Length: 302
Image: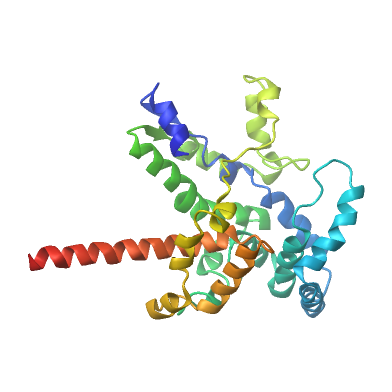
């Protein structure tokens, strides 16, 4: 994002951002897949789902990958299903824990399914925000509401604002004009999601001004191979921050689940990039704060 904004700054001083379009008009895949997953699971009693999840988890990731290889060989297309075992175990975790659509949503956006098992002093259960959502919202609208209050300001807007300010580029977000946001929340859901397609109302407007071939393209993010870097050039840095004795002494995390994921990731058996990166960012921030505090004490002594 920083590289993109740096390039834009060479030509303009103000840029318009399309952020908030997904949250307000139903653009994220979870708004489609969430209901589909839940509709296929809800008919099963919770105890049955837990038992099924336990059965899936009992099969090692490597065994699931081996079972998936013949399936991928006969699937149409060349890509098949990547990391069958990883996906199977993630599904199993949700089968064991999810009891309604709200819990399914939080499981889809959480990197650690049981935060209380990782972070010391954290209460288990659904975030308090879930109880504050307007009662009339449908399950999908509740997901959009939660994203608007969490993912949008804490991740998307924060990322763009920091990258833009770093190169003195002013960014504006037209979708967050209060008139646009109010209109979006007045629109019925079928004007946002229709026929398995999100942002339906926005598309109808764009079709009048923009060629369809510029709109109807697969979404492409700014993914970089952090997972491979953690197994390669970033491994010593990560190993230092995730050292078991260090985690224990600092007192913020339970070391065992973090060390287990780190070992699985380094071995290549699982891809835990995102959950490990969250811990690593906290650890790097904590180290930086300790360094600043040490400098301040040194300056005071001088």
